[in-house]
Length: 357
Image 1: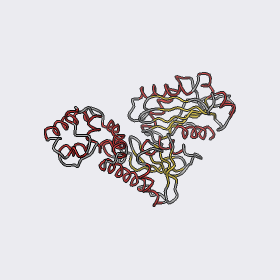
Image 2: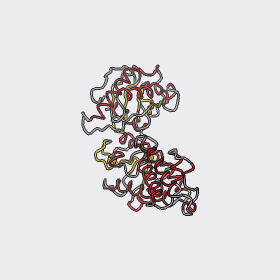
Image 3: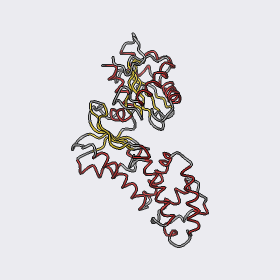
Image 4: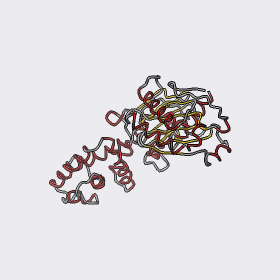
């Protein structure tokens, strides 16, 4: 059995036929816990756990670097308590968590240490004394969620943030992007939302062309109706959006943006998708450029033709706005995307592997 950073140890008499593992996907917006039999496809444990392989629970954000330790512990307790019925907690033999903000580059890496400390307290509070407790990055867990639980290849995350990584022997060895809202995350939901705010400000001061985003973004940020531009692009050019109204628009929009943490700009990304579907050329251009950024991030990792790319994040799902344009850019490189919803199932697979070592 393997442990990570001296976790809570236990010598459990639980037999494999009645044992369970827990996988955690702890990201920037929520923490998801999944309970599963220690052996995949164990029908008896599935039935005892309620069917479907076990239970599930959701808690608050789980970024190991940005969420305060006490709050991170509470979010983990919340997710675990819902996922693991009280009567099964003594039978959990392994736990693996994929945490945003954590890395396995060194035993004393800050995010890893903080995530392990919070998870150890959460497990103890619930009476879960697993023999194996391991911390992984959320990228490693997402990659392991792909069919067959692959060990090597490339991972791409495109949601609020954006990062690509090379995975070797199930560990992240090289990354590109993912430098946060201030320095990077090009092509992410935050980047798209920030571009939306930038293009409407340019339109208002005369540096940019007309876009329906001026109305939708203005409304989303509480700009008064009487200073919004017209609903159609033709109204922008007929003199109805006067200089005075444009100045008033800017003076309302700027404070609304500055009043919230920068990452909240990611909430404007769906407006860009909607405008692009309506034929707005400015919005379409933002999405095309975002796809260019993601392609560039992947190419920085020197992908080989035919190499597996596991993708996750809302921008790249079945209905994601960047899925089609990114696929069009990767096809000539001989690359394809394998999308997964999140890293929870990968964390389950990693927990099973950790227990088996």
